[in-house]
Image 1 (cartoon, rainbow, N blue to C red):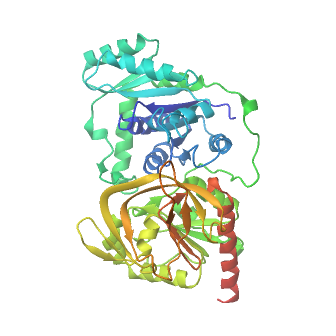
Image 2 (cartoon, helix red, strand yellow; image 1 turned 45 degrees about the vertical axis):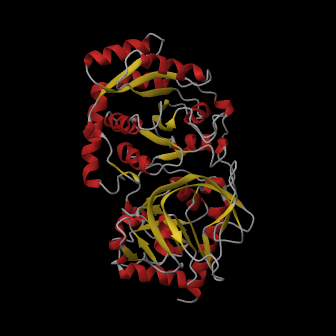
Image 3 (spheres, rainbow, N blue to C red; image 1 turned 180 degrees about the vertical axis):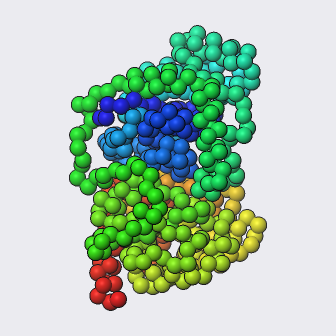
Amino acid sequence: MNHIPRLVIAGQSSGVGKTTITVGLNAALSRQGRIVQPFKCGPDYIDPMYHTMAARRVCRNLDTWMVEKEQVKQSFTQATQGAEIGLVEGVMGLYDGYEALTEAGSTAEVAKLIQAPIILVVNVAKMARSVGAIALGYRDFDPQVQISGVICNNVASDRHAQWVTEAVESIGLPVLGCIPRDQALHIPERHLGLLTAVERQAEVATFLEESANLISQHIDLERVWGVASSALEDEASYPQGHKMGSPTYSSEVIPSEKMNTPIAGGEQPRIAVAYDEAFCFYYEDNFDFLRAAGATICHFSPLHDKTLPADVSALYLGGGYPELYAAQLSANPGMMDAIRQAIHSEMPIYAECGGLMVLTEAIIDLHGKTHPMLGVLSGYIVMEKRVRLGYREVAAVQDTPLLKAGERARGHEFHYSRWMRDETDPHFQHAYSVTPRRDEAAWHEGALLDNLLASYVHLHFGSNPRMAERFVEQSRRHQKKQVRNP
């Protein structure tokens, strides 16, 4: 394992401010000249965007449910190459995972896995001495979890800061900072969650600067660095080198113009990835698995571009908020036609969540307005205020561009919409069978149309690396077909 400082920023629960504090730490440490490698526990997309922009290195997800634990450790080791510190934001509360009685999928599990000390963020609003009881309970709940300090958020006054500091330090934990209430630094939210960094690029630079200032003023960065440097290391317990089929990580932020540079001679199949305000939810590791399988990744914008990049042999339409940009998408007929033509050419296409939505006949937004979409898949999307979310394990019911029949993979589902369709249509083919959990009944998910795979589930390619290899191989076959039939 890399001999570098590492640190997990965990929360007593969701909503205590750990994202803003972690973003601020990334920005403040980077401003000091430190090379920070950011991470996010769990299947999140939005927080990693802010961490990436703050640290200027691509944030990685660490998820012990979607991928094997050894791969999580390897991901941390590989991504931190060339960095001076690994800074991890937790998910939900420190001990919250996908089961009530185990640590599975929790921030605590990840922290123990990478042997990282934890700084616990506590929302101290309307509390004083009780903060000490909270810190004591979190520290002693699992003796193998190394909580090394506390950050108190939402402090009302200097006197309040003194009280909560004394309460926490009375049980033997240091307080590394007290953050006053500052509404201006809260990342804006809506019913769908936080606004993405891609959507608010004009404001992000200011937000990052203010976050860095806030953290530098109210948190002792030298003590934070000392906690990170105290990380226990046992190099022998970690795998050396690369596993068969594992990706080689590139954590540097790659300019878009470099991403779109063709490979000389067209030796590698080019996979076009939709990326803009409407489509920006991806696991960065998925791109690494595709590159490791021999592909070149290039970005395009369904919102702003009029056609697809040249010489591509596969499409990856990821998740995002297409419903918020449905009118703009519908008003871009050049791009709509280009995607339809790609589908009709039997180009391999993988669409997840937002990508699925635009493939249907229409999106009906929360105001009841209908926006025509590609119409490749029958039915339409209805936006709702009810969320459907959770981890998903899927098995392919037949061969797909990613999985052969019977093969399994894991991912995550999160959306505020329903796909209204006629499942009795003889032309409709389900893609997956979803493995039930607890008292759930199994159900079918997604759609398969020739070489098009679409689903609400965001799959993590690390859960089955053969997915990337299969997709790239099909892309290579399509590339050869294009050469034969220009």
